Image (cartoon, rainbow, N blue to C red; front, side, top):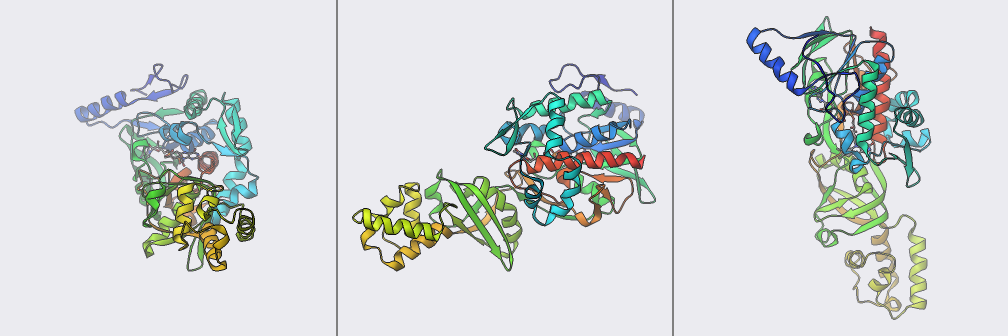
Length: 451
Ligand SMILES: Cc1cc2nc3c(=O)[nH]c(=O)nc-3n(C[C@H](O)[C@H](O)[C@H](O)COP(=O)(O)OP(=O)(O)OC[C@H]3O[C@@H](n4cnc5c(N)ncnc54)[C@H](O)[C@@H]3O)c2cc1C
């Protein structure tokens, strides 16, 4: 095989792995232009996309002695992986399996076989064996001890080298090769690959600066698959309420959000951060996929509970205590004790209560309206961030066309899927990376039986 080199000058260099780098790929183009020749490679399994899903798929395929090629359009593998968790990589979490799956909603049944074949525990020991010990933060989120997601990428790429996987970088796959509906290879800017199985792990559309693009969907469509409309998820939410901008920078650490229309609904919890144009923070990000789907029918109302530990009864009790102990104090100054001052003012304003009102003068009706705002402040969502602001894509390859036990296409024998390219997205907290690792492993493992 020509055009490869042992790339010992890069941080992500996999020991002993053949790396077909961008420069070499440029020479390939030149050679093709001069001679009209297209490079041809013959392997057992081709994996498209060197994100966490694709890397795991290639490792699983190679672990059975198969010859695997991993083809990546960017000049480096795992670029998005390195940016996860603010560069720290929230890799997975410690929730029990049932709770973990519940966070995928109606997609949980599809996710389950992959999670059971390569779950959080197995991922942690796999990373540990690879030289990346992990640690638990906030009681449930798992990060590399080093605090660097790039260490995970580097360790996985070293493992690719030891497994004999051939990694091609700067090489975009632009077509599937098939015969009688069966997938038998791919065309790429580095040449054509013939193989017995192809794993599509090309990711979703978010963050084009980190590799997000639509080409994976085009390849899936070529094999006869339908694509559920891709929408931004885990993205900030824009709101039209005039008071929102006044709260920019305010954080409610223990908030809850509810959204619903016509029977369908969503809830989320965690911290909410007000921005100049709306809300962000984990609770807002987690509900943003539902908001994006619902916006097709117009603005959608969200209900914000500013403190999940305080229900109506707790607030009522607090108001009674305030009336007794601090009857002469302004109501906003009392709310200030539990909440940021600017938020307390918005609560009074939206409840139609004069903020200068003192606790002893509050009527039962005013108290009721204040409690309504504290436990269910109406926020009018009018938009979500763009694909370049979102973290994951909601939508992708239609799940009914893929066998969840093998992650094999039901449309085209020889084709497998892994990671975000599928219509699966989870909330913040390591769910999406775990899905990428788990599905990559399952698809790569099963691609072997095609050989
Ligand atoms: C800023 C940010 C922070 C995040 N933080 C977290 C976090 O802390 N925890 C968490 O669980 N999730 C996080 N996520 C989500 C997580 O990164 C993704 O869900 C995950 O990377 C998906 O893995 P993947 O392998 O399916 O896709 P990707 O990581 O997107 O990899 C797909 C790869 O395929 C390549 N590719 C695409 N098309 C082609 C083609 N035609 N030919 C060749 N190669 C191609 C792309 O260049 C890319 O490298 C974050 C996302 C973002 C954007």
